[in-house]
Amino acid sequence: MKKILLISLLSLLSGACHEIEEWDNDPKGNFDALWTILDEHYCFFEEKGVDWNEVYNRYVAKISNGMTSEELFLVCAGMLDELKDGHVNLSSSFNTSYYRKWWSDYPQNYNERIVQEYYFNFNYRSTGGIDFGILPENIGYMHYGSFSDDIGEGNLDNVLAYFSTCNGLIIDVRDNGGGDLTNVETLVRRFITERSLAGYISHKTGKGHGEFSEPYAYYYEPADEGRVMWGKPVVVLTNRSTYSAANNFVAIMKLLPRVTVAGATTGGGSGMPFSSELPCGWTVRFSACSILDAMGNSTENGVDPTEGCAVDMDIEATLDGHDTILDFAIGYLTRS
Image (cartoon, rainbow, N blue to C red; front, top):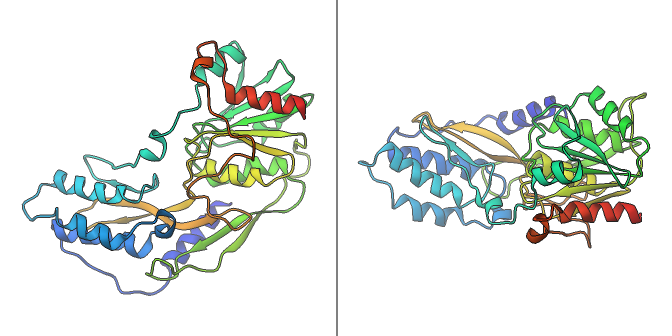
């Protein structure tokens, strides 16, 4: 997805003429502004199963004219946490709220040190945000830690060329918290041979919680002629901390031929974030535009592993230097 697409989407969100609402710059005014902004523009009320009016009534009772800015911030942050969405943040000069339980209540299922030490003896390569090497089973392995790290086309050519004699490839996006959707497209393009449906996008068309546009498709093209492509089996490794753009990457890859997803259900986060401002100057960031997978399904609550490929890390095995999710992928590709 090109950056220009994001700009276009945000234009769709804000382009229609509408009355500009104003609130007083006091605790009640700022609280009402925050609640209303989410009420009119947040896109996942149905997926979250949240009664936003009930939430208002519960939290407005905590608002008083004499409360401090920090007290108001805590009430507002608590209200936003009801959405259980890592893309929803309130930022002030003294704090930024962030809902952590979408990942903190789950096993971590990843230990970078174990992979680097016991599988590569610290003898691995790094380029363009990717750590990579060849496992003894003649399987290529690459860990991409953040889609905020730009992937150069030349970087990918070098990585995939290095794996040219390997029988399979493991792409590890555990603990990848997301980043730039452009990097998702850059990477996916190396695994498709024709124009491919990547998913659908649906934006808010009105203030009602269910007022959305019809989903419209977006596509990815294969990498340009002359680039190194990959057509052998792939296993994508995931954990709960695979989020946002990384979640989007997994959703696209899972539906491609010869690709298997192994590990744990991803953390979700399929909304495109949008920002607004309260009268006091605090900013709120939230999911305002929904991205669906190529089957038209929401992945806001995560992408499941391929059937039969759900694996957790065995804590006892880690004491002996074994990553049981990585071991599963190696065994899967060895048998393929």
